[in-house]
Image 1 (cartoon, rainbow, N blue to C red):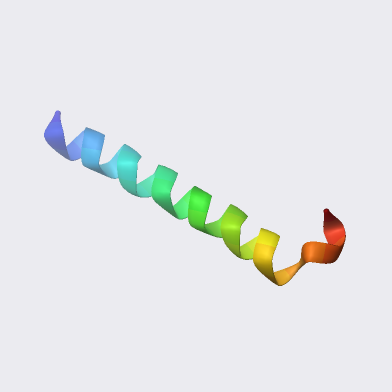
Image 2 (cartoon, rainbow, N blue to C red):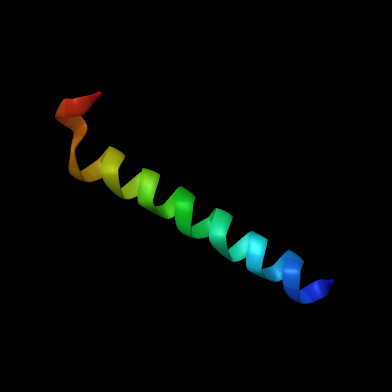
Length: 30
């Protein structure tokens, strides 16, 4: 169970990082 939770947390963190990168690198889209 702990491994699944850690994997979900890692995926969520990676997704947020991608969103932040898009927001900062492509501000003209917002």
